[in-house]
Length: 119
Image (cartoon, helix red, strand yellow):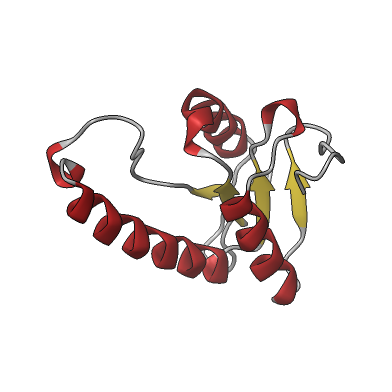
């Protein structure tokens, strides 16, 4: 366990990946929290119906805002954990991983990466 005294803070991890794996995000957050890390993760699952994104216009607007917000979470994080069941890493996640790498952030994956063009 990490030192949680007032002179240091626990490491911050940001979870990245497709929200199609929402249950796996929850599980990853649980394990990362139990390991003493502060967890930043997507806060909205646009795949689930909700009044905030009920129309295509609302969905487009909130998706753009959430994409930018997630980059700011990467800025804050000490490292990145990609939630990628089956090795899947989609286009949006690839962009986030590239951004994190450009900042020198360590990248971890929950599963081996699919090398068939999904990285």
